[in-house]
Figure 1 (cartoon, rainbow, N blue to C red):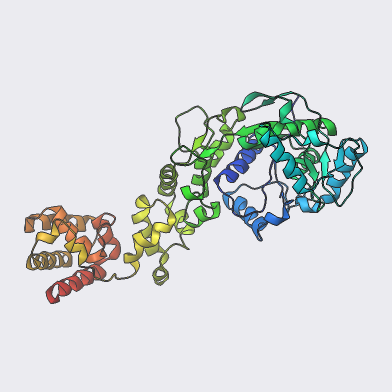
Figure 2 (spheres, one colour):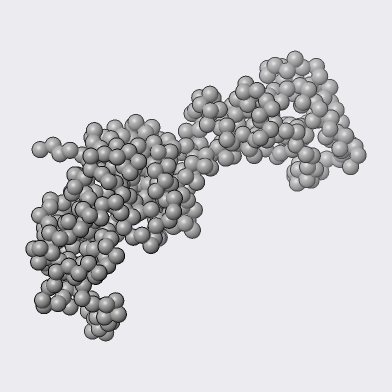
Length: 479
């Protein structure tokens, strides 16, 4: 029987979204899109003390910026709303009351201090702490000023996870847990089960840390007479060393920070999808459309994925190199140096075309292009630190630059003629390219590296190129 595919991304608004969170969203989005289903955004804000102001807007912006457009959500609405848990309290209370009426939930009679004593006792006896061992004999109703606990039914469970396969647990995994806190807000353990049921979620995609809690979820599903959605457990993302989970210390940034630095959404989706998913091929570059077409749950891996920033940089560079120049120009407006506004779009595009092959991310544009838009300050240390040029006396350097100016003055400044003139200059001066062209590059860019020298001179044009060389000659003479 075909089921209606409905997946959800249900983050807590506690700060920025890291790669692990985005991967969960991406896999849910891919599953829905690949099977003509629906992808839902739900905000799980029942822990009000941890909420960070502006996080909901941040989550929405992050998903939209990556193109992970959801079909229902807090800003879009939908027939299963509200999509923010703090706006659904009456729903949770209704379902909790059902359990109370059936004798399957009770008011927690103990203080935090008393519960801690129970924990310490279990520890001293070298056995696991189980709250149900201290469950009161006579279960009261629901005192709304106290936490409400689920009366569990300890048993063994076997269940199927679409990635991990068959899993099982013993009775020790089942315990009485809090459904509704004393402040009236539900716990995650209760709210997500109700929401997934009412929103008709077909597949739950989440990390391995939830496997240990699954038996108590199954216990609650049974008590509520709810059929669980299909479980899809994704592997953890490890840091670059492959030894521990990825953290901020491993350069795991907010997804919006990656976008701000000039990583394209296409490369981010390509990279993030590779963290735990592989279609069985050796292909590494995919368009978003190709990933949607190829994505299958059975291709999600059990083993941990490893974060490799160099691979992300390589993928991003690939996508940048394959952009049409008009598309690169359109997305580069916020990255070009401020002086670029004094030049027309054709000149800006010619500069971008020249540096495109060297770009790893868009925030490199200023450092790679600034000397095309503003005459750079002379930096003689570039000569001093150059192993070849530093051993040549200044008079020889000046002579080489004067001959360069003479040759450039004869050029019509077509790219072919520039190439011919400068190559001929090598013969006239009896110099190696590393000497002559290295000197010219420093004179016109004040940088040890640049795109192809002939192309750089061609873009700068005749007047500007010769003026920069003459300025450098004057500097060498006077210093």
